Length: 482
Ligand code: PHE
Image (cartoon, rainbow, N blue to C red):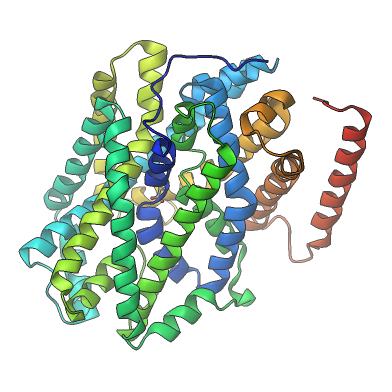
């Protein structure tokens, strides 16, 4: 069977895809969201579940998405439709692509607000606006920055315009070039901050908070949050990785690229944790301070470090660039879809989508000032966007992708795309068919409280064992079953 050939812009050079996918996955999720969620959900237990989810769900699902994108060579809607049809299945699977595109759009609507924080902090760092000598002082700066909708709106609008301008121009060159220096730069900044943290007096407490496992803290909600974050941080089920996969040349290994991206992403998150929590404990700050956590804590550390003023500027610059390379990927799917399926030029598509995005993101931005009381079931609009995407759409989308790659896509097609050694393919297939979907379902049901206290985890082991036997029997009967 031959892959459907579509003339597509491919990434420049061998490292193009890896750079772009790393640029997509490494972002505010690693440096802003991971630390504040870890703080909110009590530390080590959350981190452990997050790492398990990356390994057992994130990596196999990412491989599936890249394979789907490359096989179908198009936006999520078109690629999935083509792959499903090629495998003799209903084109309705494309619904999954719609959901992914919507998810990417919704993530971007609140992401530009946080990216706006980062850019405004870069500006403050440059203009000396981050001078305070206590956690309370830093918290006051953060609150004041949020309180004025014109100010906050200015920064998120700036990010929206920058994102759309880049996406409108076409993805490749710019992203690859910026990630090439942004990633090493970011890592160097984090290393400097970790070295500082080692001497800050809070390192041991920070380290233990991140890595000491306390199962008592593991509520169903925390596990769902950790799983959702694994999807978020790897840019899964939101059209980003699938669309980038559509531009991946046929001769590149999906397994190896996925592993590279996932390892980089995880390392950056853990490094961010190691840089941030010592500062938090050394300054007596509450790790559960919420979304403002890094903005209220890090500037304090920068003030105390030698050359802190310079480091602060470089750090917020890197953070803004990291946010931008992620933001671009969230909307690439929609722009690619408008361009390919409806013949709209990329530039027009980007600006058209940008206007809608600006309206939604402005509503999200207002959650921090005039709209702080516009709450539904205890959450304001910003929180709803985050909650619906990370806790609902991404896990469900991931489940769909797993089923699509594991059961719907023709076996030979997925085998051709992944090109794994046979034993590894068998392992991948077992994980994508049973382990990932079951894990997603159990986490969901548990968070809803449907499994109850009497739930016995041995059930899971039994189901997996049954699946293993079933697979073995089937594959013995026919060498290439559907
Ligand atoms: N992975 C990005 C981050 O961690 C966020 C993202 C989500 C990017 C969804 C694309 C799609 O910051």
